[in-house]
Image (cartoon, rainbow, N blue to C red; front, side):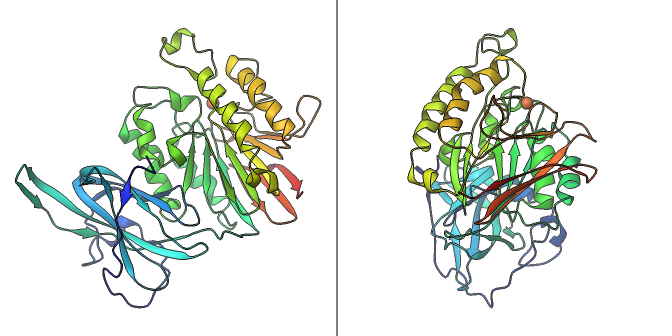
Amino acid sequence: MNNRRNFLKQASLLSVGAFTTNIATPVFAIANRRQESARADSLTVPPYLQNLTATSVYVMFITAVKSYSWIEYEGQNGAVQKAHMEEDGLYDAYVKLNKIYISGLQPGRTYRYRVCSKPITLFEPYKLEYGEEVRTAWFTFNTPATDAQEASCVVLNDIHDSPEAFGKLLSLVKDRPYEFVALNGDTFHYQTDEQQIVDHLLLPCTNIFASQKPFLMIRGNHETRGKFRREFKNYFALPDDKYHFSFEQGPIFWVVLDTGEDKPDDHPVYAGIVDFDGVRERQAKWLAEVVETKAYKKAKYRVVLMHIPPHHSGDWHGPMHCQKLFSPIFEANNVDLVIAGHTHRYGVHPPDSNHTYPIVIGGGSKDGSRTIMHVAANTQQLHLDMIRDDGEKVGEYTVKAR
Ligand SMILES: [Fe+2]
């Protein structure tokens, strides 16, 4: 998906004044401003960032009606550029869900951007009419520096259709730096429709952080369930359109795995239409190649995010299959930390006779047992704090740099 799409940039589309770093304004709060305003009814979901790298980002949003939309963005040189999507000669238009790729960015810079959109009110073969063009306020994001010596993020897991949990948990780290939010599985019970994704994920996250910082959608076993499970992926921009991927963040090399379902593929509840053994086996082959890369080998810290932990998660088929396939690779290649969820029992499990790497499992899925993890690394150490939703620190772990 990422590579077969093209995007358009037009330098100096508009001349603008001095660059200012705005604190993002909620898109609905500026409805009465002219020029830089989005009508209150123009966007169902304000922009949310995905797959931010040192030189590129995806901006996603949902319009209320079928529209032609684009992004205007500018770096510190003040030249506004335009990005939109095109495939097979056709712009992405007459759509509501937008996924716009911006590339050619400079590492370690602040950019500002806004969504521009024109509703398509008439679409006939030889006649097309637009409604009023709208523009949101400016939002900002920072591209990571390629040689960053520090890195930070937060990890949430097992939210299970509780949109109010995002605000509550993220308020516990509001004074700490974080560059992205990892959603480590089971954000939902099962996938029903778009409205569920909007109400239980996108609006809570854009209200707090997602227009300025990306989130990683990591699939848990519950995201594999429900009639909307296949459409689910359309709402995110995953590297290479896969639920498993790796990336570097300063001194950290991250590996994200899709641990699939917890029961055997032939269990009656799956009705013969899943192959999670295949998903895990393909990832094990992929992971065996990843750990041979120079980036993995030279990283100061190697950290795995996976929903189902390879130990401390019972003896059902899914956890045992993860243990059999992934754990030997972790052990042979000096994984420094595994961060997981799934069990709804938070805990820090240092290396022991069953696993040579530490495993930190986040809590959930009810109030009083939810957790948020904060990860911060520099050239000396990586430190993780796990904080329960009542504000109490319930776990921590430190990894010394290699
Ligand atoms: Fe789970």
